[in-house]
Length: 80
Image: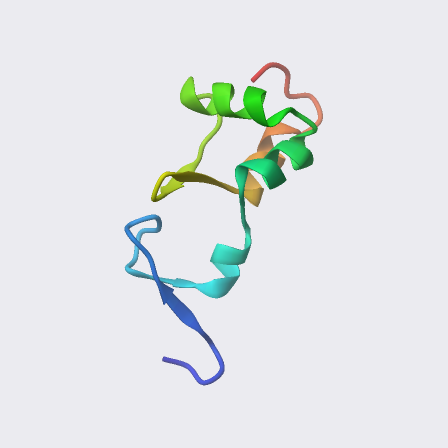
């Protein structure tokens, strides 16, 4: 392990067993993701359960990658 770089054990959320803390910092909770997308939390949960928004499970909670959310709001992209 490189000096100064922290790693965290995850449960198969990423391709490797260890993920950089920077990658984990780019994950948003449902509340944060809803605010980022300017949606209600209820609607975000509905879209998530329909498989329209990529997410990861941490126990019973959903987490969303910031880069995946950015792809959803790119100009020219319509629909969900």
